[in-house]
Length: 297
Ligand SMILES: NC(=O)C1=CN([C@@H]2O[C@H](COP(=O)(O)OP(=O)(O)OC[C@H]3O[C@@H](n4cnc5c(N)ncnc54)[C@H](OP(=O)(O)O)[C@@H]3O)[C@@H](O)[C@H]2O)C=CC1
Ligand SMILES: O=CC(=O)O
Figure 1 (cartoon, rainbow, N blue to C red):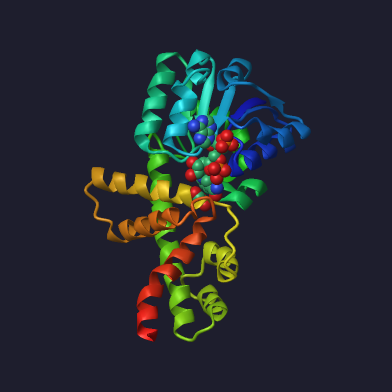
Figure 2 (cartoon, rainbow, N blue to C red):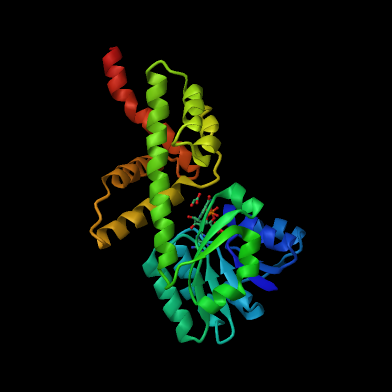
């Protein structure tokens, strides 16, 4: 199967590498050309524009940062719309909102093409290991056609119905994850400030009913103050923002998510946006400092 792949960031690089490893013929495009070099060493071809990828490939997959990137690659100069036509398909795996996905779907359908949204749950390591959870929605026939590619990139694919449902499911999941990360960060800080050993807290958590892979994976590095990016904090904040907008639309009160979003915004304002989203821990530590200092004075 020949596929195009747009966006070779943390996720796109790992996902396209998996496709190559499993025998897919892959043509890649990335805004910053240098990121395609490693893929080329592993057998990928490079295209100069998203339009060129679509011209060459029946199926084009995208993994881009946010709604504005997703829209510009479709609607911009040399974008997807310039070449999409009957018999060609576009699968956007970026995390965006339902409105963005719907705009893309309508434009592609107008030109006779097929569209599937398919955001993923799982981070850098699951992407490298082909263990993502794929949340697809849109053209059912296309979903069935691209299952071989999904099976390489993920451990489980869900088909969720009409376009928008994949985006919504992903935003709900990441809203929960971002809120959990904030509670976890506060717990680690609280433990330390209470004279407890944060590493022991990790052991206690891991044996109880709220044990989870995220605490297990991120806890030890967070304690060390190391936040090498697997899931960049700026993207987690984008997801909180989009989830809160979904909450606005559906009149869903989400005070916990709103507070978590503020913490991620604070972290971005501190210049931590390109670090892992676990860096919100540093914000919690900093926010605690003033009252702590005044107590010490
Ligand atoms: N990292 C993770 O753990 C996960 C991320 N996601 C989601 O996947 C998507 C990608 O994430 P990730 O790989 O981590 O992000 P990165 O920041 O590592 O990569 C973003 C990609 O988008 C491209 N891009 C950004 N803006 C534009 C633009 N205006 N036009 C064209 N290309 C653009 C970048 O190109 P360039 O190299 O030129 O900057 C890069 O290829 C996001 O939507 C994220 O929320 C979902 C699950 C897990
Ligand atoms: O979107 C991030 C993830 O880990 O899933």
